[in-house]
Image (cartoon, rainbow, N blue to C red; front, side):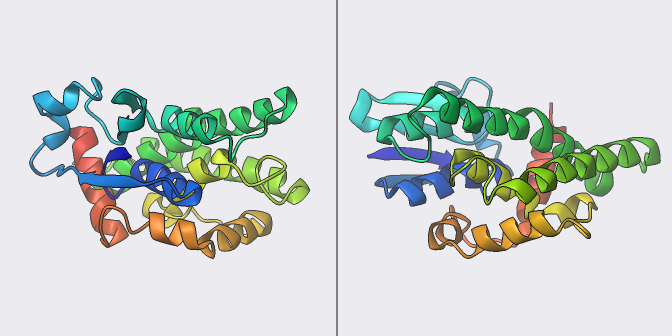
Amino acid sequence: MIDLYTAATPNGHKASIALEELQLPYSVHALSFDKQEQKSADYLKINPNGRIPAIVDRDNGDFAVFESGAILLYLAEKTGQLMPQDVKGRSQVIQWLMFQMGGVGPMQGQANVFFRYFPEKLQGPIDRYQRETRRLYEVLDHRLSESQYLADDYSIADIATYPWVRIHDWAGVSVDGLEHLQRWMSELAARPAVQRGLLVPQREADGAAVVKAAQAMLIK
């Protein structure tokens, strides 16, 4: 059994979608940003960075894993699924996973904050992060013009990227003209495991979830 500590945010949905795709038994521990539960002493023992998601694998000596990308890698290696076994295939998945972790997530996250929630309207940062997010989307679109998925087969790279791209509107970033990216988004949205994962920890309006996540990011 795996304990999932999460909230209804893109990073949280990475873990829940992966668990659903892998059909691993898990229990959900929903953390409240309003109550700052991600900063509690007990949770910091699991994730010293005080962010979500995190997991505890009860079947592996109560082993804790934090950081969404690390969680995806751990689950893929634990099950031997959603990740090729050959060196080149594995590297390809990790490259696109790192592209999300180091690019799409941080840039779109900043676009979210400055476009929606920052107390001052700073057009320079808004333009900068929206442009960079759109550029990264164009990289994805080009890749998806060559391949059905980000790697050769459906993998944790797709699972990491989709929860962010699906809320592009909240960052004020358009996907117009990116037909291959739109095709990929539609295909992933139709997957039953993705649909189930997006309901974890609970059905919540995307806007409300993003607001809470952004507010948490602004709290020092």
